[in-house]
Image (tube, rainbow, N blue to C red):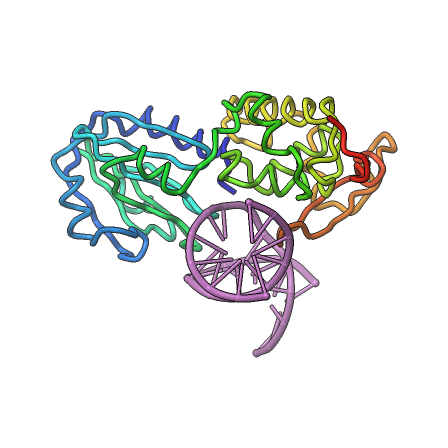
Length: 269
DNA sequence: TGTGATGTTGAATG
DNA sequence: GCATTCAACATCAC
């Protein structure tokens, strides 16, 4: 689930809860979850320090220690940070936890263990190394346009390509295509400037609103697509019927008729 | 009980 | 580069 708005919400909660507290202990339950250091090294890195700052780009969240070391939390599919005081509130699937001087415990839970937790000396170098793209909320229309130019690849796959645009995952990509009224399989290079403008606009509009609502789906606007996504029933107002297809190995939902497929035979500029 | 699908990415292949 | 497939992992729905 964690796409840009979810990760942004994790960041906000971390800032409100865990900053500037002395770290008194670390317990690792699953050594494999921290990818580049041993549990002992991880503990040694954290204990006695505080978290001083945070950074986020796309779905990558960094907690920055007071000595400048970055702890990357990439939440994978099921990662989450959980704050609690009492041991009986320990979340299921906790993989490690951090204890603070005020008795607060920060648990890292991850059912499916697709997470990447990394200790990084140099965040910028790491971001260059993985070639992470511009954050979806930051990317200008000009740069956005460049991503799609001359490509045969379906629009949705490019929206989810973290090396080009960082932060959009499977669910929000469907939402963006729906609100922009573009068929997700439309070849990117065939879109007109106006159509690209629409996608760029709705991408940022959707992500911004989702961030404002702390990625809490229940309070998303009524006319958003997500609640019908799994429904094979028709949408209200005769918009059409929800269809399902595979795109880049990911299940994709769209509304037939409402989101016309842009044909690729005449490239527009 | 077995099978396939599930929000993530990264590696391997042609 | 680009497109596709698979693997990492655990659970759930059918």
